[in-house]
Image (tube, rainbow, N blue to C red; front, side, top):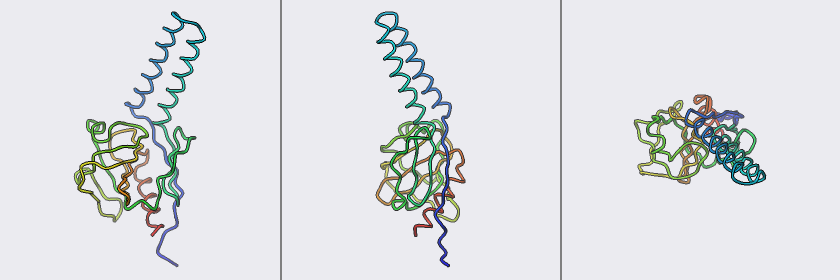
Length: 190
């Protein structure tokens, strides 16, 4: 019997924070205002089209904040809104997993914003990090690195350091269970 654990099958979620609900609400409010203006100044058909477009935009904004994700033998698969799966973050690219804590006043500057996104983010520093289990924390020494992110709130998040130069950041409802599942997935691969 080998010492490798089996790959996990863990399902987690992210939920909108106050910032996320504000974005969703402002999108809906803008849609109502523009629809009312269009209805009073233009045709009813134009108002219905605008209302439909803003409804879709509001749905898309919500989907970028409220997600379900799956940790398994392939890696991490995020489903926007819980039903629209995005390409998996590949397990073979995962080097290690660690906790990263960001204050609310630094999330926008450090990561570039909230929600499902891909881009450059400020690399983690030692004071922001804590180990998962018996793993060591890992810093890259670079100022910025490419990241794939599903961040909906400030606080403690799960950061996955990638082998290819891309890191991954996730702010799940249950941070500890998510970090342990990703740790188990990495250990099952080795």
